[in-house]
Amino acid sequence: MDKNMEALFRPFKHAKLELKNRVLMAPMTRHFSPDGVPGGDVCDYYRRRAEGEVGLIITEGTTVNHRAASSDTAIPNFHSDEALAGWSDVVRAVHAAGGKIAPQLWHVGPIRKPGQGPWPDFPSATPSGLVKPGKQVLEPLDTAEIDAIIRAFAEAGANAKRLGFDALEVHGAHGYLIDAFLWEGTNQRTEKYGGSRRARSRFPAEIVEAIRAEVGESFPIIFRFSQWKQQEFSARLADTPEQLEEVLTPLVDAGVDIFHCSTRRFWEPEFAGSDLNLAGWTRRLTGLPSITVGSVGLDEEFVTTYQGGEARAADLAELLRRLDADEFDLVAVGRGLLADPDWLRKVKAGRSEEFHTFSKDMLAELR
Image (cartoon, rainbow, N blue to C red; front, side, top):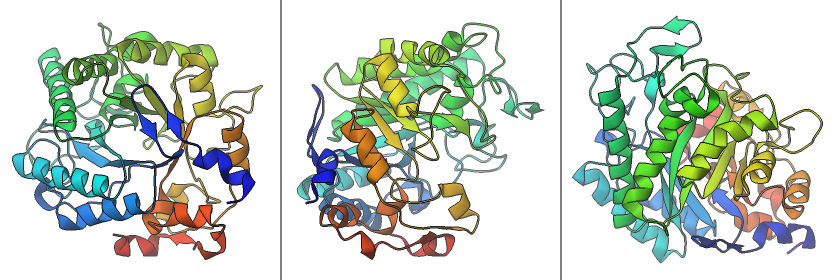
């Protein structure tokens, strides 16, 4: 192995989670679970990535037990007996291949359009009825429904531990429900869940607290968040490190162990005056391990790809420099591992010339 690669293959040692290297498989929605049930092909998909020596697999988003949580019947759920049996098979297969795995617990919130999902007549969920700033098409969630959603996440956390997962991730990014509470553009509430950054963090913090009560202190909880939203790429939760600390502190206090910091390009600085990215600032402000993600091993972000463009293979020099400097602790890889289960083995063996461009035309074939 090239000496420059050593940082990527150092073991990760945390009081609650030990991994054989610093590479995670990023969660990627695929719509391959009919009626919400992950079948044998899903099991094989994750097994192959475990055989490829990924340190931790974070599954595609899997929805909690709330009727507005899912926008598609082919997205896996994390509550029906059939789906949980499928996930149990996935866990066994990944462990048998020497891997570790965490489910990503998800509620799509305002991204769900009317008529979508397993309960098409049920209204979508948003903190203030806003899909994006200035676009109010729904009724705000009342406190009873908020409490029901928190209970659904807690139940999902209990299921994750019972099924033998190694950790879990709460999806609090990209404009989905939890992120809609964090983002001032979609959270205009004036009671305890809105009005300030700390108040807007209360709903996700209560979810983490409820999960922690179910899984105990030793089970790892990862929290994924982002500045950007799919409704508005320029959106920001924080314009300064001090503001970011206001957002994150309630989540730290609630029991988050690791932050997954979603960016579209990992190499971009988060705030003026420093080249630290979002994961770097999160680690510095919270003292907790952080995960970086965003076009790792590629020269362009994912939206360009899905709109018909191509992302070409790029070297890892800048990533390795930042990782070796302890700017962040872990690296999540999405499209690289989606396209090639052996991506990490090839990196380790210096076989990057075998990587291909990633394009929209490839998506239908990726299993």
